[in-house]
Length: 435
Image (cartoon, rainbow, N blue to C red; front, top):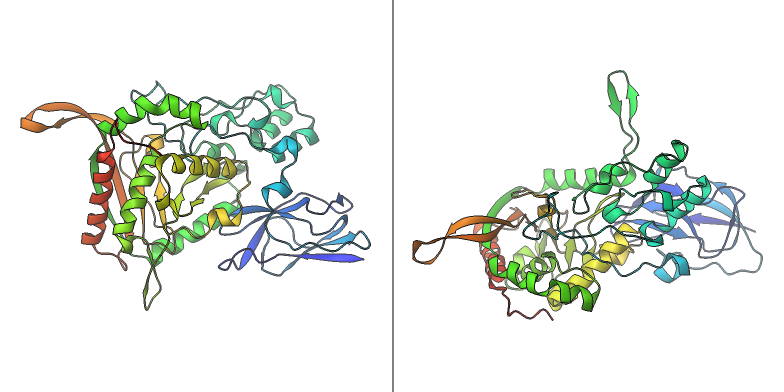
């Protein structure tokens, strides 16, 4: 009996999906719940599991094609007598074999270890990953197909992770290439560059194929930029005491929790608490009304080898600094290993970006479509400032940059919120509790 696999409902606002990669070809055997195809939506990339066991008979949609929800994707000659499973984005238990389990993350979702002093490369004190978990299951599969020993490759992904481009470059070089120069671990977009499609020469110019996720980002950002009238504000916060707090706690925190204590969870805590007092920042525009969101669900920008993703920390206002650090570390690991589920990326009400991770001091981010505003944490830097009694002192300062939808907010509301976030960050000190 032949089973027809269709593109399932993957979220109430998702209307279509792009076929990123078929994991099985016609004639291949497939087990029930085994991933069969990678699909990109405007929310996230997901591996779709097969609802039946059997043999792939026919591929109906080619890689790179975009089809609507309900479209036929492939046909499978299924095992007789088996009841098809309900198709939903796979859970970790369904997609992870024992050897695929992700070790506890060692950094927060987006690198923000902007320690002072910084090292010669402008990074914090993160260290590259080692061992078998520095490559995703998909990359290990590609390596096996090409006969490549991952132990001979130096990864160019985040924290030294091996990405598919590294494996293919190694194979194409006849096994003599040890990968391209490894980018610094704290780089904001290392994987985006490393995994870019190979340019194709056309005369003097070059063309680069647009990936599905790049196309989605382009569409969503263009829609936001041309729909929502953006306005911007920047304030400077004196975070000298926060820097002291982190310096005194980071080693014990790493030992106790298994993740680095970066500045990002402090910013997330300040933002989440401030949103409770400024509900119009936690809102969306609906033409004839403004919807004030009941939950504070904080989107956190994460650079991955596929592009920029924004997983969501749900009910962020109920979490402590430690809780936020752990939640962001978990989401960051899932994003980099392509294990995010739709629940991980849906429901965001406000976005926090960490542009300071690559040294930026001022930025103008585009508001995530359907939200009221986005805030960026810039680089922490030491500068002379006037303090009490007109004395000059070296202080640690950071810019907080806010982009907001001027249909929902005016400058006084945005400024009041930004001032609140500033005050909360400046209130952190060596005696502040993290739990």
